Amino acid sequence: MTQLPLAKIKLVAFDVDGTLLRGPTICDCIAAGIGKQKEMQAVERGLTSAVEIAAARTKMVCWYRSHDRATLLRHVQTAAMLAAGAREGVADLKRAGVQVALVSITWQFAVEWLATELGADWAVGTQWCANDEIVHFWPADKATWLAGRATELGLHPTEIAAIGDSAGDLPMLKYAGRSYFVGPDPVDLPSHVKHWPAADISDIVRDLLSDT
Image (tube, rainbow, N blue to C red; front, top):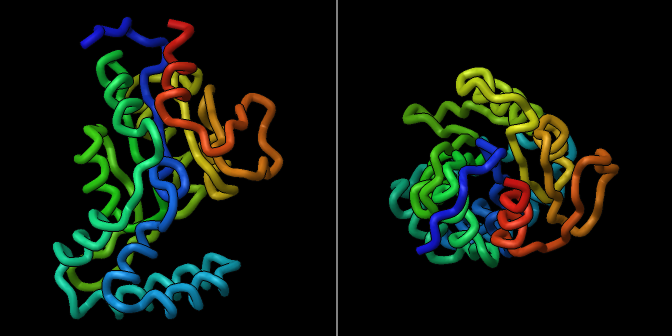
């Protein structure tokens, strides 16, 4: 195993659905596993506002109640498709002394599983609490969360990189000093964001580490 030099980038934040995972989203994996795929498709077609997304999350929790979380998570583990180079890329970052965060608006319990699977340091998302309360995590919260970690770790935004695939990732892409957009459409990207559609994660990591 090659020992990589310490990187100038100290923290890398990855979105999950569409970035580290390609194909079905975490919510789609769960819905298919519990027989709610058609209902999930109908819900997704109507999401245009935070109010509608919050209502959709409440509806999903109603579906989930009759299943234990371990079962729901197994549906994610079975159906989720890692992006090419995801394991290798995160491993290379860790060997280079870089902290890794998975920052997503999807369910935190699934994000935490993926973080453990890949060896990431942080996992944040929407929390489904034991009393069925939902603690929502929104796109704007991604930048706020990153700024909080930067303060905690004593980092400047230029020491932080972010990777995402949708308009919902723009807040954290704008905040980070090095950013990559792997979605098909550029959605008015800031000038410092590199547009690498469907990029292999290990290629992005090599680019990040190339200026060490």
